[in-house]
Structure formats: structure tokens, C-alpha cells
Length: 274
Image (tube, rainbow, N blue to C red; front, top):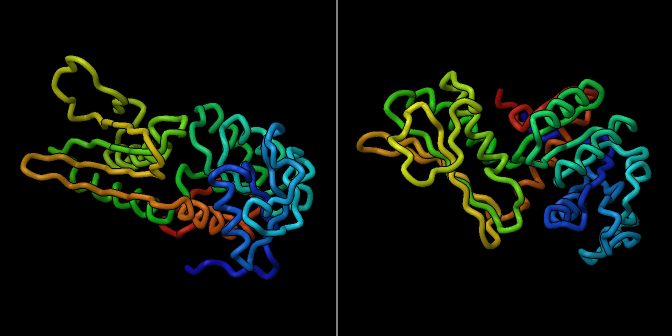
């Protein structure tokens, strides 16, 4: 299935427009004729407030950066959010109020917050995914397939690395990969995950899925799922070298929602991989 071509440009609001992902999202929206920047949101203490959102990229967009969510969402089509859970919850409530679709790439949500997102999707269309990359979405499918084949005699470990500014661990993507492996094996990740090892831990429980986290420098995002058997290892790896991969995936998800009024979707739906 190809990427949708819009009859009219999709009116996009970007949350956290002055951040690292916000910059990349702005660049991608400006470069896509199917999209138009409608609103630009940021925190009340951001020095960019009141300035043209395109100024930081040397462009004139005609859209001012604001912290007024209601003003930004008025007559918008979709909000793209890669911020933090507490901000995302505010944006989610506003999107329901204004009937604006939402792309949620934020990670670190609690179980309760995920339930709020699920409930909100009964009123507005939402794509919620811990990683918007097309490559990572494919990796999730590959992990499920590998786990079904390597279901005996192979230990599963997930190693992820991100930049020094990331505040949650393991990454949402690593957890999603763990969920994919666990579900393929008929397990619940909540019951079999091991998030850290230190000291005398004893032998590895073969039913567990281990996680290792690395934080440093400007690593955009590396994920490896390791299936370690006797005499061989199978490693499935994705490495992101630019945030553009996440931005492009998110905007592809925005186009996917163009004809949806409600429902909770992820990138597998967007890419028609189900």
C-alpha cells in the first residue's frame, strides 16, 4: 500500500517545536507539499515563544511558537507529539476537546497513562508507537518471527543505546521489542523481564528476557535483540543515525490518520504489516 496523497494539505501542529525532534519535524513538514504547519507548541519558559516557528531554520512560516494549546489546535488536523508524558497527557485532553487527531511518539508512560490514551482513542484517531521508524517497525516483526523459530534453547537479551539526554530506561522501543518476543513465546513481559544484573545473580533463568541500557554522547538510537544459543547467536539490529527517520515515520502516520475519526493504531497499522 502506498503513501496517501492528500487532496488538501494536512494541517499539522508540532509539540516541542524548539527541541531536537521538533527541529527535524519542522524541516520535514516544510519539505512535504501534502503538509502545512498550522501550529507550533512549546513550554511557557521557552525563549522561542512569540517568534516565527521557521526562524530557527532560516524560514518564514507565518506560525508563531506558543504555549496556548487551544489556540494552536483550533481548526488543526493532527498534532505530532514527541515530548514527555506529563505534557502528552495535556495535549491528549486538548486533542479530544478540539477533535484533533494525534501522533504520540513520546515514551515513558505509566500503565495508567497508557490506559488514558486507549480510552481517548474512542473519541479521536491516535497513532501511538514508541518508535516511528519504518525500519524499527520491520524489526519488531522480525523479532516475532525469530522468537517463534528460536523458541527453545535460545536466551533473549535486548541491548539499547541512546544519547545522554534520554530520561527513561529501557527505551520504549526496547520494551516494545521485548513485548514482541514475549508474545511470540506465549509469555507476559511483565513476568519475565530482567532489567538489571549485579553481584551474584545465579544462573540465568532461560524463561527470562534481559535488558541492557547504554546512555552516552549523541547516540540517536541503537537496538539489538540477541538470541543466544549453544554454538551460535542470532542478532537483529537497528541503528538510527538521524532523527529524520522518526520524523518521516510520524508524518507518514499523520497521513494514515487523514480518513480516520477514531481508533488506536501503531506503526504496524500504518505500514499495513498486520
